[in-house]
Image (cartoon, rainbow, N blue to C red; front, side, top):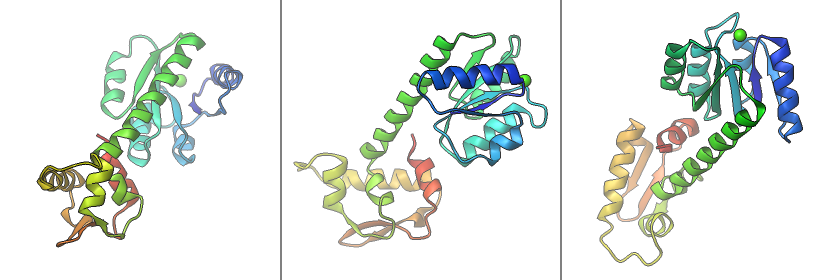
Length: 199
Ligand code: CA
């Protein structure tokens, strides 16, 4: 966990509380430092930071990774909370808050993250992303994404792949090998594919 908080008292309290609860936690006081850190599972983000607007930090974190972001604000900053949620925050807490509520919200965003992960499998892109450049046959995709006893028309696969290509924004990312199957283009950026697969 990364705590982004410029009040040293609050930052220390939060880090201690998280560590007592079994998480590994660290804190930074500046938005710029938060953006330089490698991605963590969860970021607790104070919106009132001395260097960069917390909403901007939120937006940039979201663009760079799928880390769960819980925004922490003072009372009366509803507009900021709405903006932060629109910019990719997963949840928010209003100060002052108790450690028990914070921990419950952390568990909730982590659960949601796991569900999003299983969604990737259902949408069938995982077989392409897990090995870019490898030809994956139609049969293999149908078996892994739907059911090994699929007897219906494989047209449904074409419909899903067309939707995926639209979502990815670049139709060449998924190559069709006629009569065989599909493969994720070698030039596909992992992050781009992962973002598009996240419903
Ligand atoms: Ca602050």
